[in-house]
Image (cartoon, rainbow, N blue to C red):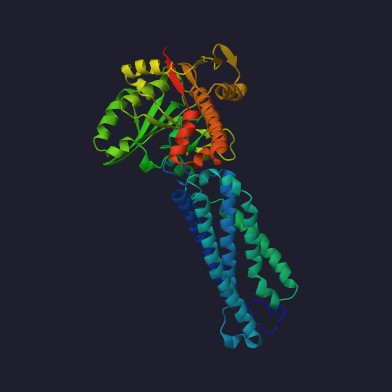
Length: 481
């Protein structure tokens, strides 16, 4: 049985399509659409893991709505290309049977083939560049993915143009009846693509759980504090160790913070190993035996949950000081954030832990030297988060202006910061980073007056003069509970 003349076109000289060829074209098109959808689906999951999985075992997690939308786009692309393959299969007839319109029919076939190859080449490059664009955003591309949410309209435009392109040369041969077939094709492709997109070939939720089960931020409470003064942390090959101090999500009554350590030594890297606080010194001593000497002078990076009490944080600092790890970089968040909080985990607030944390003699020496400045101030934080400066209560919002005025009027100062053990780590970071911000502002202003350049652009000798004029002179005194 064959289709009657003019059933699909308005030209009686064009050959009729046999029933067998019609069914074969439909079968080939549907089979190609299903196979190509499976290929695109696997490629998307592979790119999601290869490009968007960080060293901390964080991965791009898509919502169910986003997954369904991406599946629909991939399914529609596969289905349109399958339809194009149908056209090629139907119209692939020897030239001697095409008659008067042989050149036009051959143009349809060539156009379908060139469109398929050109689109696949272009789409693969676009997907690769898009993955590099997000995945290479300073290690935080997965956290700015929402910025690219408007690209879904571009993807809809891509499949719309792709669909019209398959009918471009066919429209040159057929009259207005082709609009009717285009409408039928659009409805069929949309319904079939929608059904095909509901097929999840890979359990992406299970993959997410397997990867995130090794992510400390996912398995524990680790919300970083905000700081008004920060810089970019050292690269992994220029740090001594990385410590995460988090809390259990189950909030057990007597459960203390959990410590994870990543150490860099001659024998390789220990990735996120959970240890007890009592064994921290032993771990460092064992690792330091296989560590290069210059690495021991590099800073330690601390990721600490903002609600952890300072009594525990001071114990960590004392332990590191006894190990001669005086340089510390505290991972912090900026006070004004545009993206997800995890995007800013490469920002730190640097401080040097004084030797008096580890040496009794160092504490006695500090007591003498801290009283040399003319103006010695006492700064207290209470268990409820209140701030007292020389007995006067200071509000958090007014703290910066208050300190700025004190240091500007009395540059020869020393602040004894009495840290209550029940005050939070977030309050501690706020106070020390605010004081440091004030010092930076005063240094920049004074540097511009003297050298007509900001402090960061000065030579070492010039910067030393500015530091002596406005030093960071804060002595931390833990209040033991």
